Length: 114
Length: 114
View (tube, each protein chain N blue to C red):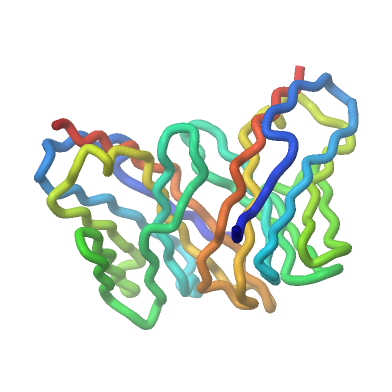
């Protein structure tokens, strides 16, 4: 089944404790992206990647890192999480290069930073 | 960067009525405009999209219109049903170098009353 998976689905952590949220897709998509969703703000793009080893900042990249060592995986890293990073995070992937293609979203990861 | 504004934030209609959600964008370079539906506790899913070289697109009860001159696009749902109740997000995709960034509206909560 074609899908985007994220782990963990729920995470409660404390300020400053490094964490990684994994994202994997099995559709051979070139484009992958991370978003955070906060009430009243919609989805905001954190980072995106056009292909292996090619990543760039979205609208709200501060406090996050990503890597794209393999085409199927795009982990989101919070080196020193803070309470303002408490949010619902979605990974997404899309087939094409220059946009204009449907993004498929993962199930989401609800992160709470105490 | 791009700024996408979405109105209204909530919309309540009677079953069978039409619903219209409007979005404006600021960057004339934006060239792809998807609409996503997010049911409670679920991931966003694409329901319809339109590219900048097209003025209107229809898929059964759903249609999207784009006015590039005025920089606004709208989602139209006819003959609404209770299962249309969800949060709807518009987005604008802007070419940036060889990539596309995505900017989402803040969402419209649609409630269809039986």
